[in-house]
Length: 410
Picture (cartoon, rainbow, N blue to C red):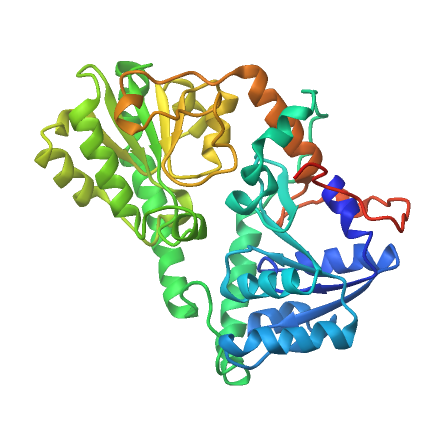
């Protein structure tokens, strides 16, 4: 909760883009109750739809003109903290640089590092931009503790889909009002609708078709397969914090390395990301690579599966920088990251390279993971959900004019 308390050390806060939906409205109300003034910048019609009742200002210029516009806005409004969701979005990356130049605090929300029932809030950046990623030794100064169990947040996929649909439709209807806006993803409601419908159809299809496959993997390859959780094709953590420009590059590297260096008695299981179900299907691509490398009988690709079970029965996990890596550590599984990740710490992840990982996967040190989890819960995690219940937004904190250091060690 220290990150949330740090927000209360500021008197005038500016909200940029938040998650699609009402979460930033709830955040603004919480800040107002604690005596803070909250302003909001809307970049498109979806922002305008959900945040039209806040003290909102439209930005209708070009992305490259945003930094000087923002500098003037921050001075005129006497803003002392900026808050966003997703620090890798173009407008947010520009805002982070402006805040650094003007010595203004910058906070970023993100999906929870620890799931379920948590969301992330950090100062200066999240994931590979986290202070922990820059200085993992800071975490070692904290004793491991057993955090209290989070309150269930009842996150709703249906609510997320409904809020997203309204956001995209509003963005389309008001597109003339924001002629230069550039979204970080495809911004057509028609294509998004198609992808959501295809995702629903594929989910039903693969749940039925892959029943035997899931059972075969868990029974016949128990403790003899490496799990590769794929990430969304346009995941900002892949595009900004890894050497890959596309998931296919990652898949090809992993399959080639496995074919050349993994023991013959092991298998490779690649799991599709559920939020990428409607956009990508790597079946033909993975099958072709497996045949070319003569390991078709040892490579499996699945779209659905109970992740904790897949982790529990695996021999180790290979990821770019997914938060599934933290789940792997929780299940005491050897782990290697091929991108930049805040949990890529000696003693937790393999540091000797992918080729060596297959034959000598080092188990994580449990005491070190307990320290990491304790640190994350205390400094970066909030008990809540963007499309569900957030207990921390109902809490009141004593007002303290002194800034709260969420990351006391640099």
